Length: 151
Image (cartoon, rainbow, N blue to C red; front, side, top):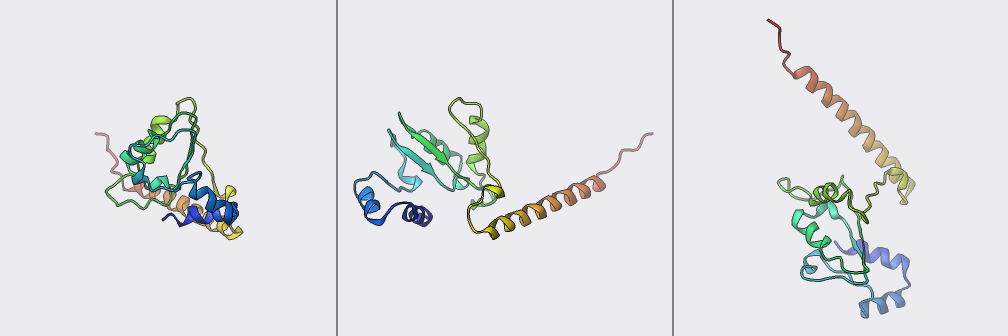
């Protein structure tokens, strides 16, 4: 689950520098479970795949931010891997924190994809199908609703 972070670092930083940064803990990759109790001062912190955090985990992460730190939280709402009975904590955090000065929320779409051109086409196809399915579902709900008769 940490492999994508290592892949990104390998793409951006030459191997010898990356090894040095990792050995001096200039760059540290830590699972969310190891964040409890820490305060991250003078740090640039990234929480990746945040759609898979529960309410307590996202709150714990957010409360680790120390002085002179900046945090980036990334998530894809279409790829929640939590058990069916567990809701992503990211949605509550987004709602609660949207009006706090110093916190920004940016949503990207298929036009922001920097992977292969086919990935954009794939996302567009899924979005179009999701939209069609939603319209069909709304149409079914309207026809299935009982109509009250006036007496």
